[in-house]
Amino acid sequence: MLNELVKTKNKKNRTRVGRGPGSKGKTGGRGHKGQKSRSGGGVPILFEGGQSNFVLRTPKRGFRNYNRKDFDILNVGTLNKIENLDKIDIEALVKLGLIDGNKPLKILGNGEFNKKLEISANHFSKTATEKIKSAGGSIKIV
Image 1: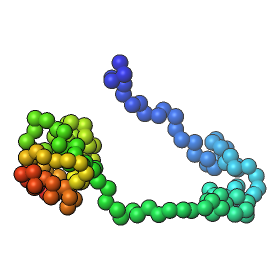
Image 2: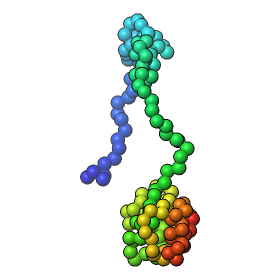
Image 3: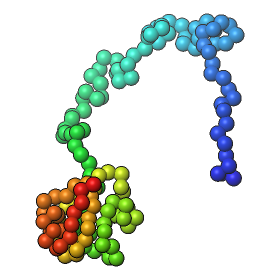
């Protein structure tokens, strides 16, 4: 059965080159002369024989801010469509399949909102906060 498979140890030992004639002795599989036969020899991965390499030749555009905060976002209009809940938190939204739950949740203010709900999330936009409080709901920052 597939669920009963066990990982087996590799039975073949690693070839130890250059350890006498019993193994790959003499040149140790490196050939005879040249840069690649010397210890410490060889060329860098991106080296193209002196030609300007591909990475340097391709144009670089744009900017990716590595310090940015990435959120699961949800609009109040989507929250308005949820039935049978008076408390909305991250776990409930994950169960409903609206968010992944791997990132912090931010509630945005796009759409109509007219339910009296208690909403828990990591961040709220100003418009979302205004719409939730004007509908009689409450927010809780987790």
